[in-house]
Amino acid sequence: MAEAHLIMNPARSLCMVTDDFLPAATGVGIHVQTIVEIMAERGLRVSVLTSRRPGQAAVEYWCGAKIIRVPSMKLLGFHLGFPKAGLIEDIFDQEGIDLVHFHYLGWMMKTVLRVARKRKLKCVYTTHMTLGHLTPTRPLRLFLPVLEWGYRRMCRKLDLIIVPSLHLIPEIQSRTDVPVQYLNNPIRFHKSELAQTLSTKEHPFTVLFVGRLSAEKNIPFLLRAFARLHKEFQLCRLWIVGEGRELKSLTIMSRQLGISEQTVFCGQHSHEELSKFYSKSDVFVLPSLFETHGMVAVEAMRFAKPVILTDSIVSARELVTPEENGFIVTLNDDEELCAQLLRLARDRDLGERMGRRGLKRAQEYDPGQAVDRLLELYPLA
Image (cartoon, rainbow, N blue to C red):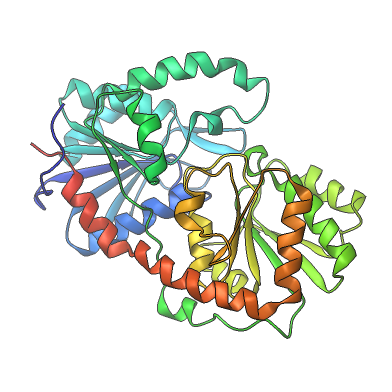
């Protein structure tokens, strides 16, 4: 495999492969939007191969990049691409693709990777997800050995693997001899959105979650801890922003816990609209069972909010220094999460101090610098 030290030639043509893109339903889609927009601004030729949802055009242009949507199916709440190899061959011919950058594990990656290797194209993969994301429920975990075998086999076909957390490097490197490099996930908000950041002392203490309503996000843990908080500190509310298959069960659970009036299921919102939730919250909680990076936590930090992460999140200690810009709690320890929420509810000044420190740390996730680094990593011949 080629070493990854050459800067991308602007005359070359790059293809991003992601099942989620526009509109973004996941953090991966937002990540790809961010880097594609900056690359296009710099005059690079970028195509995005993504899934096609009902009512969407097969081809359109966005911020100077070409979006190509392939036949898709909705499975487990996600729109996943299922293109035929012949279609990918035609797209590569038309666009003159030199390098393919994958962002999603799935059938589309498998098909596109096969075509790309046949053409001897350079192939890069960013590990936004672990195998745990593909097996969130107990029945699906029976397939882990097969998925592990397939994952190792796939890794051998790549030229470069990019990880969003330094803690992932040993795990990925144990599966492959392909070079593994770290690159943080960039965060981009416009100045007008960031200007909404304000003090929230005059409002009820507001706990925020942003993400898919799916099993791996472990939202029942947050609901249980918030129910404990409400017994100790009644002037509080919980905003859950996102949509997914767990909505009905979570709504029922909030009623059973006696917090339905304090819990607002806000639905899905665009990345731009998220600013109003970040700005008006007091603390952001990511209760996930597993997570490679937790980009939404950095987004909350960008709005000067303290964050609470579970110790099962791979990058937890890269994002949070406990007592400095937030807390790291033991997974599914309702009492511990409640205790940290209660501290922040009773001491708003503590939350604001933590938020200011988090804001300083979030500035390290500058999108322009991330794209600079990405272009240095691309292993072009």
